[in-house]
Amino acid sequence: MFKHTIVRTPCSKVYDGITSAPELGQPIYELALEQHAKYIEALKATGVDVLVLPPIEAYPDSCFVEDAAVLAEKCAIITNPGAGTRNGETAYIIDAIKQFYADDQIGYIKAPGTLEGGDVMKVGDTFYIGVSARTNEEGIKQFADFFGSYGYTVKAVILNEVLHLKTGVNYIENNKMLVSGEFIDKPEFAEYEKIIVPEEEAYGANCIWMNGTVIVPLGYEAVKKAVEDSGYPVIVVDTSEFRKIDGGLSCLSLRF
Ligand code: CIR
Image (cartoon, rainbow, N blue to C red):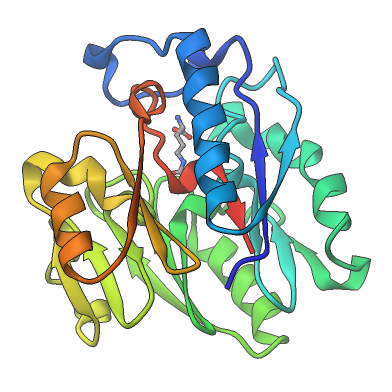
């Protein structure tokens, strides 16, 4: 069960976030703020507290706090984002993490290692980590050394198509995961019960399990129905403005 979450308010430059889908247009700042406020309400409805960090104008993508740190029961790590325009975001997350973890429980990914939290998927005491354009083998090695010393296991997964691991696969507890595209047949996930997300709803694979409830993005009806049919209550949140810059539900929070 999660007790805490951390989010960061979008900054006014959110329209400048990195995108692979310019055809969707730029995020509208005011709408992004509204959607972010509703996201916070949805998190709170699942019984967690929400620490809201202030916007950072210098970093258009900084509302995607998930990428700057990885948090678990016994330890935490500050990442080293592979995206140049995002790399400095980590300096702004450290004080927040120190509110919850002692100094010796906090590790740091260092160059030449890179790692972004969007590539890290926790399943119990195992972390699956995507080798991506943002996360390299050295970053994963450093993560495995630090988390391994706390008894966690790390398994690397090579990505070919998507930005981050959790762009296409998300664990929703009870041995179940939402999978799309290249993750439908990955041998690494053979042991799990899969909810297969149709290609036209691929963005909807990025749902988050929150204490028994699954938060699903607005507009992905097949995903919503499949999650409900699997027995989960669902909360729907509109993420249209974040989608325009490749962001989804998981990217917007740290959950621990
Ligand atoms: C980026 O390209 O870094 C942002 N525009 C989107 C980050 C999404 N974060 C995530 O999947 N954890």
